[in-house]
Length: 187
Ligand code: HQG
Image (cartoon, rainbow, N blue to C red):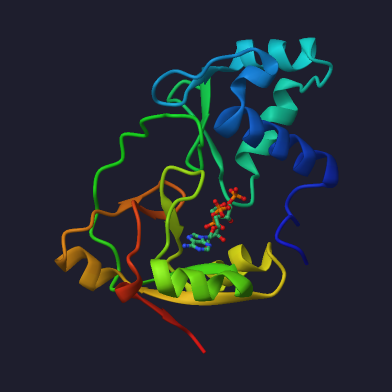
């Protein structure tokens, strides 16, 4: 079973298209996100149709509701939609800082480990460094990159040192950066 098992291939394609639009390039279909990342569902569907990649309301509902990682969310009345995290365009997600578990995990390419242990984890293009609550999830994140490794982050020590953490509604932990002294390898 793959992690995409809940979605068929066409829905995976739709999910990727939606992630591109709602996290990275809303302008690619001529829409804008508001400062919190929301966009109107009707406008989104019209813009997709006009660009030759139509999505029905049912398909959109399926991609959002059956999403393996719950990447997207509706507002309370279902009129608007946004990505829960992972943006490269500037958005304010209104998350409150939360105390993390003592340890968090980060999956990455094996070839990146040396550089990460030397300089720490930085957000690269995203707004935050993404961390997982459990090792298995981190391993899946790392496996996107082939040969991978799982790193352990001493979140308790980071908290004591004044670093803030946020937890997204789908269970991803975010922080601004992880200096190298808080990182160790699992093997
Ligand atoms: C690496 C996916 C060398 C970092 C996933 C990572 C996750 C460094 C890459 C979510 C480094 C950035 C986020 C340094 C960081 N030297 N490499 N100093 N600092 N890196 O994709 O955490 O499917 O932006 O280790 O499942 O891999 O999009 O971050 O390998 O949950 O919903 O730079 O994205 O979710 O890559 O993945 P990314 P990530 P979605």
